[in-house]
Image 1: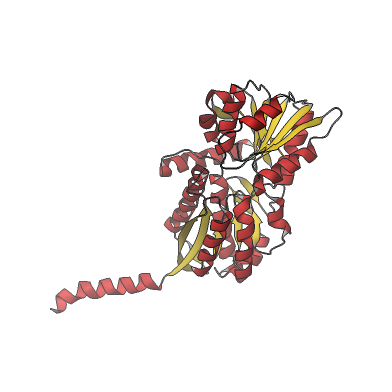
Image 2: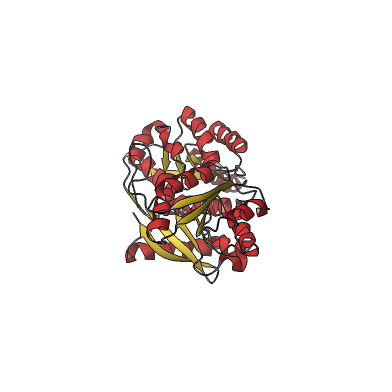
Length: 377
């Protein structure tokens, strides 16, 4: 009987040791349902990949082994759902949050995290309002709309030499924000905004606004919104015979746009910008290696924000290690002064929580695929 009890006693001892090991919960929020689900799943996959890699290496805080646990929630790109899941993460006692994807969900959710004293790092939110709130625990690892929209406006005028521009936005926080900043940047002799129209993030028929725009004969149509609208809009532009170039921010700058637009994406017709930038041969190899590992783990290609999500998790984990604590109040000061070399480049934050020296990568589409043009800082 004694001999039989020994394995049981050992098992109980090991179980006790495992239960004593600290578990640190990190939240992730993205739209894994709805029209932006391909981007939300991309983000969640990257967050899991980062957590799994850290745990596999034996993540420690203050010399003690810690198990990181991802608590993933779906906001459906809906502000009301976004605030509900934000409160859910607070109640779950997460130590930090990676997300949200859309500015329209990230901005209202940020107040809930701030009130709870939980740091939030967004891998995709570009609305200037997000960091203008000056919440001490609010950060982002991508450039904001002022940089994104303003730079695209300047590029349209100075490099593409367009004169007549039509602007459409989807009435979301992101879409309106990037379109407004684009108009501010699109200044020059003879440059005219010949039309301003709007749709919604769930609309499928753009015939009325596109017909109005066609009559004004624009050289370029700027769209503030996501690829789920941008792709079908390009198809309808082609059907109506609108030959203007099509420009937008990171919301349309996805691998999925080529599939959604079909042959309407054209060859070099679309110009878009990703709110981040990788320069130099060494960094290019780093990001290529990440994409290969991501595909091997998930079975799918990176859609857009996955590298930024991965870096955001790593930055939060590095701050915890530097502070020797996973408690938000203790690691937040380390997060503020972080200087981390990630797969997307060097990550450090300014006093507002914006990434220092935020870059943009310009892309076009050739053969239905994204093709890199330039990196602008």
